[in-house]
Length: 353
Image (tube, rainbow, N blue to C red; front, top):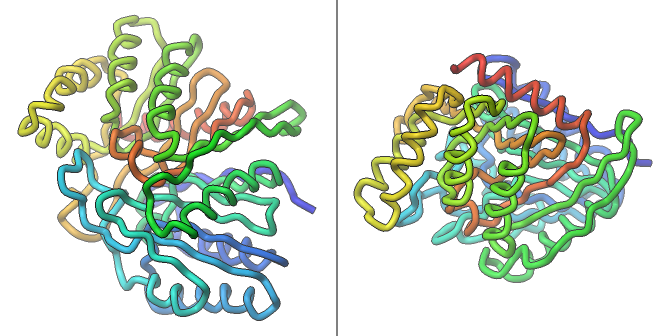
């Protein structure tokens, strides 16, 4: 029987890799009938890689129907205004993954298969911002959430099936998920899934609308903020000096976006919006190792938006590119859930402000 919701937050230097690998393997070990895996980046060193592959193999051996999809190209796509989540770090286990279980490689050019989720036994979803890399588990801010709910699992399965059958990103995520309702910490929680590219434009507009409607608080962690609707709404909201907002981004990735916008007149109108937001004293920026400098990778990688009691989290950076990629987001309506996510965002903000 499905258990309670589990929220796990990772910080730069805050934990070793072993506990996250333990949790990942334990999640797989509990599979009894099926396991669908969608992962963007999977690079682990020898022993950790061996253990994860063996765990997936053991699931197959006990009769679990295991399938995996993954992005097969880590290049920055031509014309991208922000990089993908991370370049490869360490030996890839993707080739071994493809050899170990039925797997489909999704071409990463022009649009990334940037999802990070698993669906177990058609009733439990593992998702968040976290890739399967040692740096993601030890050097980046990240979030993992496990939600046991068959209705939510059905939506993730529908997205997985589209990617599995079509072998490309285009025209996937093309459906609307109705909210599922259940109890969480003694109160009612509603959760639904949103996928891009099918609902990418809607997703950017929806996050912007939630920001516009927020009255009590806004908390954001996102490597970049390059979505036009979201940038415009933030700039407008930040004109109110009493608005309680704390936003954390990754400085090198934002600087890269600004540099590229300076060369692209179609996007240059976004530059003053970023400048206004940066000047508001509501934005903290992590000075991570630059994207192309190689490992270790220590980006501010969490993707969370809290607007009053509504939370968005998943694989989606608040970017125009994210509207075109294959991305997964959950929208959660719950005060206790939002409080927990907001507290994490506040700790990250305090560290880098």
